[in-house]
Structures are given as C-alpha cells and as structure tokens.
Image 1 (cartoon, helix red, strand yellow):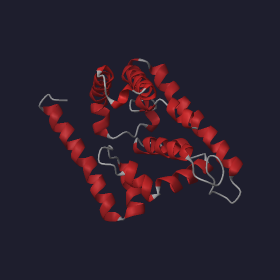
Image 2 (tube, helix red, strand yellow):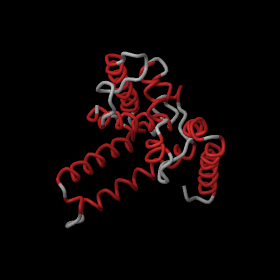
Image 3 (cartoon, helix red, strand yellow):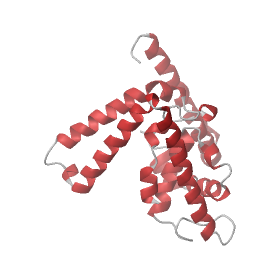
Length: 212
C-alpha cells in the first residue's frame, strides 16, 4: 500500500480532472500551476547541491520521482486523457484499499490495512485520503464503506490531525474545516475556514494587480 499511495498522481488531481466533482479550493485552482513550477525549481536546486543530507541515494531517488510526478501534473491541463486517467488510477487504489480492509474486518469497521494493528501502510493511506478530502474528493469513497470508516477513524486521530491536517504548511479547505469542527470543536473549525477565505481574498487581489 505504501507503493500504491506513491503511485497516486496527486499533482494531477489538483487540476480539473472531473468537472462533475470539481470541489477544489478556488485559490488552489488559480495558483496551482505557479506552485508546481516553484516546487520543481526548488527540488532541482536541492538535487544540484552536494554534501547535503539529500545526497543519500534513496532520498535523491525520491526527489527525482517527485519532480517527475509534479511535471506530469503541471502538464496535465493540456492532456485531458491524463486527467481522466489520474482519477481512474486513484479510484483503483481506493478499491484495492476497500478490498484489503474488508478482508480483515472481523468486527464491523475497525480493521487496518494489514489486520487489527496500525502500520506505516495505514499512515500512508491516511495521508492519501486527507489529500483527496482537502480537494473535495471524498465522493471517491462514498460507495466504499470500509474506506469511509477507515478515513473517519484515521483522520480523527490526534496524531494525524497534528502532523498532517493542521500542519502550518498544509493548505486549508472547506472539507478539512468540517473535519476539524467535528473533532476539535467549532472555534478550531471556524479559524481553519477563515484561512480559506483569507487565501481566496489574497489571490483575488493578486489577480487584480497582475501578480497571479
């Protein structure tokens, strides 16, 4: 499952791949191309540096894979078939997760990827589900009951919320605000929602003055 999550074309999903379910935050729709270009430039700069911790072969391979995946995402708007394939690939990963969770489900909704104990595979899938959720893509598991229960259970874990969902560098979204409201209370969810409003307003002003 770690490999499966790594194969999900997350960068492409930030572009319009399904017009019926396009629930991306508005500021992300406007700025994602520039953001991806910046990511690619930053990663290439790191790869060019020597004598750093990322000289490790495994880390170098991971950076190169990230550059390649992000490049494909950046080119996605000009390739409608790639956008469709990205959605299809994501759905296939979720269906495989559904099958594995169902196979281990002995008590109606408390199973993990490898059985009744949490592993790194569960953490990878939790991050994957959060990425999909913040883009408004929870519709992808509306017909996958075990994935839905797994997502609710994993994304409600305090450790996941602290390290992933409310991490300062994570982009906010309405679905994420709803999740935070449910688990941390109205005030926390309200503040998160206002971050969405602020970024939408900021990007709107930037467009008016030609900066976006």
